[in-house]
Length: 102
Image (tube, rainbow, N blue to C red):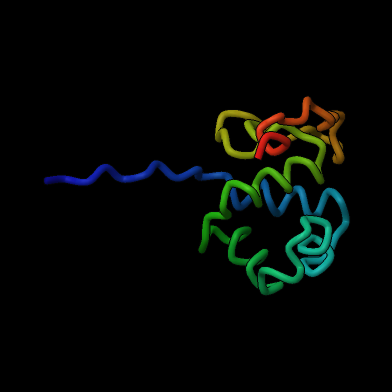
């Protein structure tokens, strides 16, 4: 039985690097801004930017929040990031009631 290959974003690493550079952050500072400084080694940022690793979805979400862009702008190869970062997306949203019920 053949397994389906997961399609990989060709520009994801480039965009993550553009976000970090656009915000004028070092790799360590980026990790801190993402809230993962105690979870991931600082060189993981380099792995993401070079395309050696694909960041997990929660990390991509934090990149989007830090950069104030939509996640689609980061993962969709056909979309470009805004020319100026941070963008103008506000991530206030509506809080889920799911956690309150638990």
